[in-house]
Length: 155
Image (cartoon, rainbow, N blue to C red; front, side, top):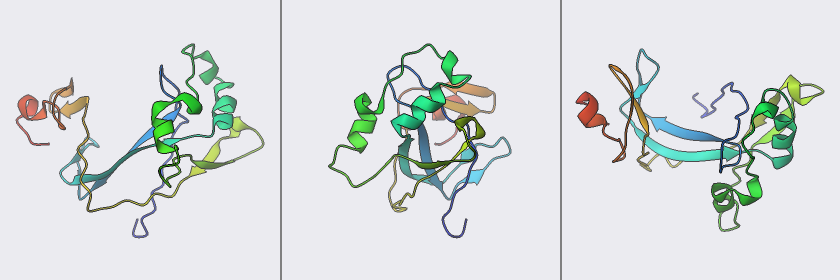
């Protein structure tokens, strides 16, 4: 909004092999929201990840349906990205603060973090999938994959 506040609802993320529980975040500036809810144009000044307190992860993972995931968990203390973001060489804190919305974890949580973004920075994400006029397509290669070859467009 005009104050730079972003609010969204989401589910607590599940985990996958080799990584701790986290959310990917990307800030887009001067983009156009297309009718299919994808973005076009603009640029990307920030790409990052948000993490959760390990105790909170354990509490969530003990509830359904998270407790049905048989993939071994990777804890924050051994996750390579978490370690890079919290190794003491940076002042950033990528761990979300949180509060319970009720008496138990199943009632939900409210989580927050403050992020400063250098809007003059330009990062080039390496996409693995692109939504084209004919559907989703796996891509590899440059910062915009093979998108220019797939749909004749520009990334």
